[in-house]
Image (spheres, rainbow, N blue to C red):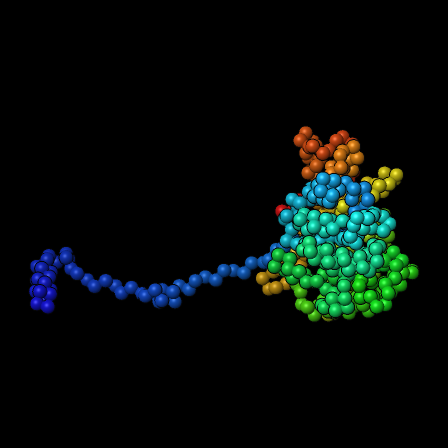
Length: 420
């Protein structure tokens, strides 16, 4: 203590001897504590940003017998659709969620079949999942091609493959859960999916299994002209009650090989939009049909806007016709890219529509495993013109140019833009 006092006294004396203005010791200004600094400059909260997601939709997944045979791998006595689908994989990789219409039962082998009563290998489900699809519609005119047992088995196979499904059900309880609605997370946006078919190619479900398939016509096994509006209204009310961001309805309807929608399609789509449908995604004609926006007054009495594409055509298939036009139209398809945006206030809408044209390439002179390929039309045209294509010859190049023109004629040229 004494040493400390002596040292302090020496410092005072030295300070007193210093010239004015020099050597003065001033106390440092008090510094705010870490806590007070945080209170004075609060951390800025990040500004909320809109959520943007991409829902991609494709048409009918069909395995006509020539396509099934091209997917047979003799060495392993198995089937593989990878070469058929690989041309679409780069685009599907950009999707937050992708869907298609599975228009064949998976009834089990080894007796596989094509039109008129389809039965495809289980590998089809696994390979479309690997290609990037997340959901398939399972209700369409070929749902009962192999009976209700095959219908139920198809759903088991899809579950094993990790593919969600909507439109058909194994039990009444499964149909009653959410009224048969499947709700998916599409890149942070919740979308409720419903699915219906106009009929079952004249087949009639027994009353005890009427729950097995969603059908929107009351006369689905006869005249196919009376929509079951009560069923649609009840299911749409159930969808609204789930409070998703958007409601999408997949519909199997229309007249085969017609590139224009009919009045039946128009009436049903308008009713669905009135009931709250934001998206209506159609199929069955095996060719493309136009898309448009419907403005109407919704079930809630408010103005409501919905988007409808009347037909997405085939996706993978093996239809072949003597008619050059019909042959071109059934081989030409698109992947539709729907941009969905949820704003900072929680309102969700369709903010952009674009599509990519595809073409089902037939190369019968090639060995099994190389004969059927779905190709990106624009990419394949560019590769041929650059001299780098391994797939496209002079004749198929001409077909691709026609396919692109066909898409532009039906869907409009402005929508033909690459996905980002």
